Amino acid sequence: MVDTRGFQSHYWLDHEGVRFGAGKQSALLYHPLKVSSLELDTGKKELIVNLDHMGDHHYVQQTTSNQVGKVRHPSEYRTNEERVDSFSLVVGYQPKVMARFIIQPYGYLTTHVWTEHADEQTLESNRAIYFGSEKSTQASQAVGGFVKHRIPVTKSVFYSNPYYKPYLRSHIAIEQHPQFLPFLDELHKQGNEIVLHTLYLFELRHYQSTTENILAFMKNRFGSVTWIDHGYLKSSFAFDGLDKKTPHYLAQMWEKYDTKYFWHYSAEDTANTNLSLDLYQTRKNDALRTPLYWSHPTVTGPFYTWASAVVPEDTMYQYSGKNLYELIHNRGVFINYTYLARVPSSERAGRFMIRNANGEWVIHPAFDQLLKKLSTLRDQGDLYLTTVRDIMNYWIAISQVRMEYAPSGAIWLHNEGKQKISGLSMATQSNEVFVNGKKPLQREVDGERIFWFDLEPGARAVISSNPADH
Ligand SMILES: [Zn+2]
Image (tube, rainbow, N blue to C red):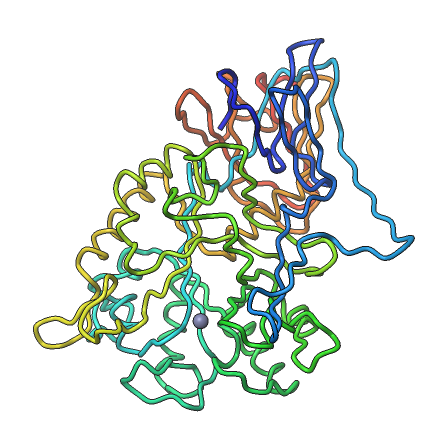
């Protein structure tokens, strides 16, 4: 969103930007890739460029002796170590066209991601959530649920549970139930993201060769790039997984097998669903520091954390029409953390699933209605329903696009990443917009023109308000 009047006293601007003045008496800073974040204090008339701010990259390390863990938010540098940060300020020149990135591709207005922790599930409960009924054994037989409504989930699974007992709330795992893997294959084919919820759910010793086999399996079978920690296990991301000096070190395996997007407890630090169904928490104000993802400069190496907010089953009422309307109207982003296929503790009914008259698990009708509503909002082009993998790939791709303001008044975008960016979306207040001299796909929303196009790796796109500008 763009504020042009009625300013709040303080803004945390992340990697977005600000323009002061107009025409020759102006200064513009936008999309600074190599700093931690921007803040604007309108009262003091100050722009703050955070080169490294601990609030932008939370990481708490679990320790056996201390439940709170060791706070390692600040970067850790040794004597004489150096780092270089840079940003560009455009002064005395205002481009003819102003355009900003929007947070998701293909002209959608807002993003929602379902993520699932793997605890206390059975095959029957999984079929109820994804296919609508435990009686539906294939995607083609779906009578409701996520598959029927074509809503993808970032679904975590346990690889192995030696203590598994069929039909109980005893945590299904790939290795113990022969029908679980074919079920996951179907979900994968339908666009769901299948990832590990650690390897085992108990504190079992990870032997290097077993670990390697499992991570290779997940990569080859599902293309897994995401990981969701389970509790305080020592081989998790937030415990000893990054610590080379322990037998629980996994980082070299994660790196080798492309696991790069992590959920750990610190991912939950900013959002609160009691305030709004939005990681930006805009209902409060825009001063809040609400990064959507981050990589800790010195602790987490090449890995990223993605923010999320827990939605306990008994708070599903937060998914009201009003909150969904606000999420879209405010152009928010929401990545939830749920236990979708967890067998309800009553063994009779929960908010996600319920037993029917025959005693079979089926998706809860009210929850199925919600999924139907979400899919309608998606089909209208407003709500981008996606996975952690896809939205993180998009965000990281956008962070590798360099912006340059050309003398013609146009904007040049350079894709310095290695991947093609599909449906790259921007918004402008210009009446007309051209990409490389041609009209891109576009829509008009709230007085803004949202447009999108593809950008190949190494390619340049010229954004202009006049097809002759280049
Ligand atoms: Zn768990």
